[in-house]
Length: 91
Image: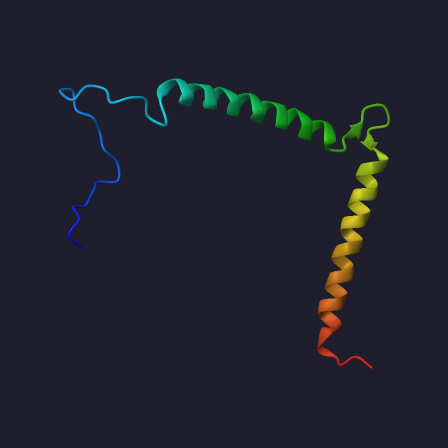
């Protein structure tokens, strides 16, 4: 209780000069921003290649897309039926 409160962020005034390098400086901020931008671009390209697409020759979705759609529909029906039939006691 007797200790003085220290502000959470101290800013050096012009007359004090620089007291050393802070944890976050402009160079690190720009480098981090650049790495983040390149990482996002890489992740977007990788995600695009992983998504099943429409076959250009036959104009219909390829087999993995069809299987994924059927699996999604089957899973939704399974959980919907279980939830709907959950009121009855099991024998």
